[in-house]
Amino acid sequence: MSTITFAPHVSTVRRTTSARPVRARSQVRLTRRGRLVVLALAFAVVVATAVWLAAGSAATREGGGEPAVEVVTVAPGETLWGLASDVAATTGDDVRSVMDQIQQLNTLDSSMVYAGQQLRVPTE
Image 1 (tube, rainbow, N blue to C red):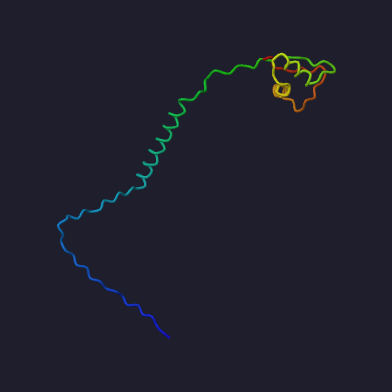
Image 2: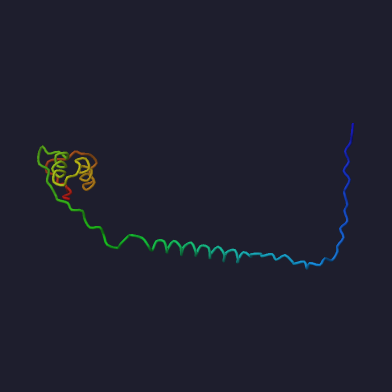
C-alpha cells in the first residue's frame, strides 16, 4: 500500500518599495439608513415616472351619456327575436347583436319575454 503525505508549502514574500504609489481602496458602505434613503429615492423616481406617463391618458371627466333607448311593451305572441329584428331593420345591425343589447339593457337571463313586460330597446 501507498500513503499520501501533504507537506505545507511556505513561501516568503519580500516587500519592496516600488516607484508607483499604492492607492488605498475606497470602500463605500451603506448603513441601514442609507439603504432606506436609496430605496425611497428609487421609489420616488418610479412614482414620478408613472404619474408622468398617466398624464397623457385619454380619459376625460365627462360621461359618455346614456344610450339612446326606447321603452317597448311586449304584446301577446311577440318574441325577443321579433323585437330585435324590428330594431335591426331600422338601425341596420345584426339581429343577434341587437338581441344581446336588449338582454344587457334589461338584465335578462334568457330570451324569454312575457306579454305586458316593458323592455328597453336601443334606437340607434
